[in-house]
Image (cartoon, one colour):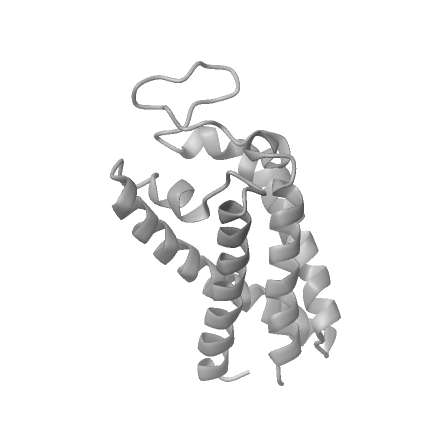
Length: 157
């Protein structure tokens, strides 16, 4: 895949993933707002946090697209199904490993073991981000599978 292809399809896949997560939030399937969660690490101002968080997520999406592309190159082929499988593993890693450690690195997030404070008022997501709603893991899983499927379907050697 060329640099232009990576930039284009990494952007498209991340935009679709972000749209699916935002739709889940808007429809009440989850209370997870990824732009707010990421951006609030940088600023307490809610509107700016969403902008910063979206920018962070877009950059992360481009970087993770490189990991997916490396996997496709290693396999010697790519497909939407292979991409969706990588997306499922990616989502599982996010939900099982990354999300539970967020209270340790997020300056505005309470933890499972310490009460919220004025500064640390953001609710911790908990295992599988279940504190943000019972449909949160499914929403995150499906969004990441679609992200991977887009990359797998558009990868060319």
